[in-house]
Length: 354
Ligand code: ATP
Image 1 (cartoon, rainbow, N blue to C red):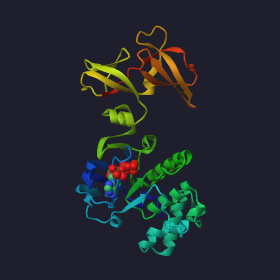
Image 2 (cartoon, helix red, strand yellow):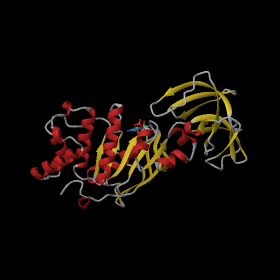
Image 3 (tube, helix red, strand yellow):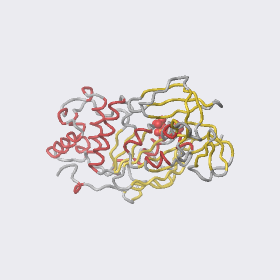
Image 4 (cartoon, protein in one colour):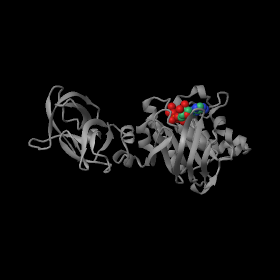
């Protein structure tokens, strides 16, 4: 048997149904519903304090829900204690036992379940192999980097073959390069094991990069759930458009079912938007330099330009004072103070009431 053998594992569907959680003077979860298909990787994304960790803790049984249902494998687990929910967890802070070796840390959950020593060693070894730390089995936590400690925490969470994996900002204490490496590694291992996973993060790039679907939260509610592509290209409102990806906020007006931005008529994502003045939320890649003679183009003055390796971002100011950032290929190198002509690509945009 290996840990990655699909025959030895089954993935559980998970659902939060109308979950409410109140703290004194505050509703942290205000009717949260979320379904994860077996083996799906879903990120809960939102600003600080929106209730992400509370949702994860309620799912884990570390907090009790005031209302609603929590289903694992279609069974309501509201009254089931944490250690009986078959869940593995990794938290932001490195939570390894300092007096145990790496191998002993990983074996811990198996020891608690009375698994014989030889099997414990074999399973912990296989898990450490999977996270790339088999050669560090005899080290202690203080002899590991932060990224290595989180790999051990992941191995420890997975060694008991839980049916659900909960990750609460497991990367936020790591530096940028290690973060990206470990996030891809987590996704690889999750895919290999096919384990249903809920990943809490406030980092939109992280959420979009690794998830099958992302649930964007605001003040205790889920605003939108969808694939990264859907959230980015069809945000249901300005909060999601603003939170997921970069957006320019440009003064505009909704007239006759379209939005007029710097004199150009552009389709709306939300075709029901009310007529009147708005802010249009325009992606930097949806503004481009215009060719000569382009009737839709507007003059603007370059404010700043930054080289970002594979692309360049240039900020321009229009004659009415509005500013916007364009994202374009590096070969085009405008200088601050240059007058340029730009236009919108015409892809639909989200709008926000003034
Ligand atoms: P962050 O990204 O900062 O961790 P979050 O989205 O995970 O934020 P939660 O930790 O779920 O947010 O908190 C949601 C709200 O509930 C916050 O206003 C928080 O202060 C409050 N809260 C969380 N735990 C408790 C508690 N035990 N007692 C009282 N209030 C709490």
